[in-house]
Image (cartoon, rainbow over all chains, first blue to last red; front, side, top):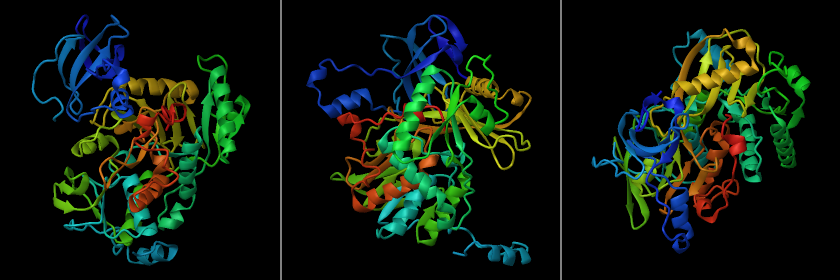
Length: 97
Length: 416
């Protein structure tokens, strides 16, 4: 089980949280300008890296707030936690393992 | 290949079983192949077998980074059924069930298929209506399916609790009598042995580290055991599909999640069917050894670690005891996780890619084992003819652009 540091509530059990998947997927500013393949890329395609992954979590059974976590998908180590709207920590190659 | 039979068994028994031949060779990789299949699980080996048997494509290799069937093929809960809602899925999974029904004879390898019946429970008014709709859709596709009331469920599964005083009472079930279980390892080994006998090189401990592409065409593969030149590469890597696709510059609509399962200590036969419940999130059958084989839903986060979190196990046990209070003092023996490749519409991707000569078979998510033979059958056709078989034609990567999704969350999201 993961021990997740909520930026507002501190360390809590994973069972209090909901994982919201890959972070930093921006809604295209002009959706009508996209072709079907580009729209599919936004809606469906995911990076799914084996290594460090930036993802959104919600403290759904706690404060109810969303935030970002950078976590390794093999070791499950949480490398960084930062609030929505904050810039992710610049630590080089995120997708590599 | 030595045929397995009662006579070969007797002959080898006389010799104290010291002279059984190896079931498949362990060749060094050749510098070139006509088709290279990446992934030595059930689906990859089935693809190799049907390519060698049904199509004339030349030399075939299967590359496996560790050992055969060591991933999800050896980690699933072995359930086979074809009670899917949509026509596209129903045809594919029914083809798989039909191939399974003749597979032990076809492969000369006992896959221990046991068509003991699969029950899908309904726990509320919505479940009942949805079940009624599904059973009718399934029957329209010529697939056996029937509806049971609670007394009927109790007749099929005498130890189940159908009392009305629980949070999720059992109000009915659908039953596919042709569904059941098979020995998962035997499916991998049977396909491997039969493919090897037809000249397929099965190369274990050989990890693909790069895909060589020139002018939009496949040229070859870089592996941990040297470079292999080939014009056709078929990726069948389940949880690692995104990693391999990224080597070819492709993005997939897939996220990798842990899916956990466990077995109990062995007990005397008490459960003669496969019992599944989407509403309370558990599915259970009893193995020939007497262990209960129990599966859960996926863990919520992305992972490649083949392990999951404890709260999933806990909720799985809660659901099991809700259905079977009789198991309350049973101890669990082993627990494990596999990495499943989950697609947004809970249906697989089997077909071509934008790279010429690169084919992909992935996205089976939590329920690929039951489809193994049909997946290999249709994928082999796709690779050999460079166009999909009618069974897998709807399961393209392009469906995510065209919008022709095949939403099987009701059939596939939880229960396998």
